[in-house]
Image 1 (cartoon, helix red, strand yellow):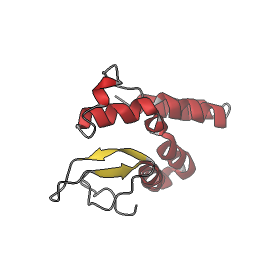
Image 2 (cartoon, helix red, strand yellow):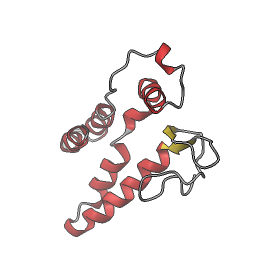
Image 3 (cartoon, rainbow, N blue to C red):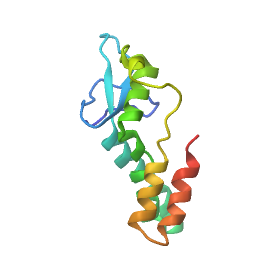
Length: 130
């Protein structure tokens, strides 16, 4: 899955279909590309850790990056992203429409995995989503 997402946010066509967070619009070849969620989470974790080195919080930032989009693994979110992107024109049949909460899963995971201190991380994760 290396190189799935270009820095400017587009797909470069090398995406894998496993653990996808959602489709990227068709490229010049007319084929949809899937953006790997596992790769995205790891990359965000590493970037966040790098920014947080300056104030000695790399591990906290890495965890926040790893867990910030855990809710995107849910079938509800997968259906939402496929429906809204136009990737799956039949997705509207099974869904209720509207946005899907994807930040609560990561926040709950942080609170459960790190009793006490994880609550602070949970606030960060839950508060970043709009």
